[in-house]
Image 1: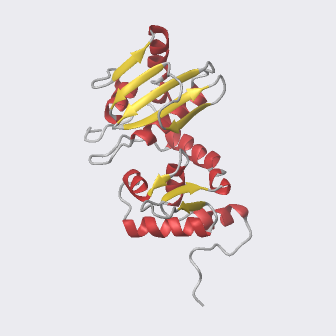
Image 2: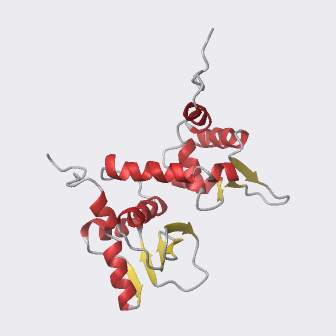
Image 3: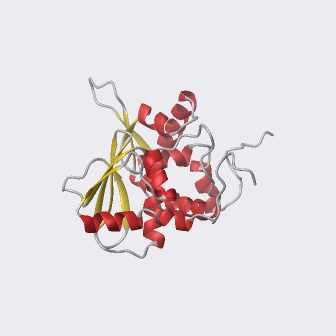
Length: 226
């Protein structure tokens, strides 16, 4: 009898969870829906390397598992995908994996490997939340590679969301993900426009480098001889 490779065939709730979301790309699809509904093309653009066939299959599987729903409206060609409450409940899992990866699986981006602004900001936000010990209110508006994001704290947990802020931000940062990465790890900010009052901007510049203090010391850049 051929064994079903999608199941573990023993009672363990971790195994049961992995049977639902453990396939390649599944958790990354959920990761990219945590900040809001996305179109198929939005997800494909964030999931560098996934094929349309595989993305379609994963979306169907996640929908069958009750984690993702497709929002279709009569007369509208675009389909928007969003998380169900059960899918959104995976946010702590995604964040825990990202925090573990930052401390134990860090490496520099490889040549040709895309750096998406949302993924970079997710790591930055996690580093500040876990390691900066800063719980003062803040609102930072990022306009990176043509997309808007908000990193904010109301005095408690730091959080990332997609879209421009409704109320004015303390600091507005405009540029590219690559330029933001340079600011985080090297200090200079070529190509970044950072605006705001001097106090909030100085605090931003201090906190934005938190990620560089969390990753393992002495990461080797691609092409560097060791």
